[in-house]
Length: 248
Ligand code: PGA
View 1: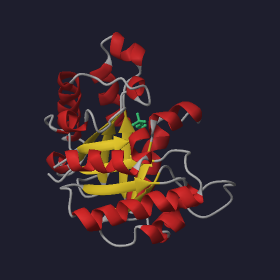
View 2: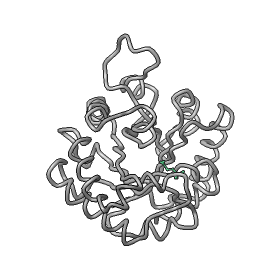
View 3: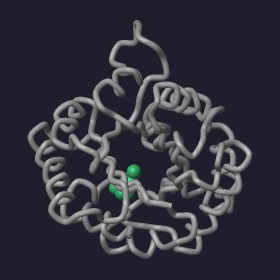
View 4: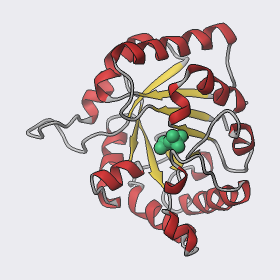
């Protein structure tokens, strides 16, 4: 399966920096050729249009970090999937743990967003992952199984769904699970997908949480790891390109 390396820029970069990073990535991709993975960048909403121009072409895809599940209407401050598709997005991240924590998003809410992404003809990147206390209480597999059951919408298939396994305690901390722990969780996710996604064996399961040039090759070589969701390391061109190159 061809890996996907997705950069989640979170709430970072002003307009000029976002465009410079996106253009740099596009140029690096042209100059050095195919690194052996699909590359995606997910800027903040406000930078999507300029980044769309900077990465236009097939080599670097564009995604959003969130969406509203509804149609056009009275939802002040929100952005729906039709708008994101219109702006050039092919992917939308939903259910990131920072949104689950900052905005109280439930599995049900995340599921509705994922359904809206799919209905709009894009791919939903559904984020799941345990907190530290759940890991310590040996509830990790139970937690991710529940999140999959609750957050993956009907009609999800390998063509419109990506899962990102991100242990909450590994995000932005420099900590990562062992490769054995990652393998165990990804195998569980693969097994659980069989009952809720079409062509479940083809669904890409990304690892996310402190992935960087130093650990990417080892993590990306783990069974059932089909790419990465990269935060901090996606903000520096050289680091992000190194992670992409490690996917081959
Ligand atoms: P990080 O973030 O790579 O900075 O840990 C990953 C994510 O939250 O998607």
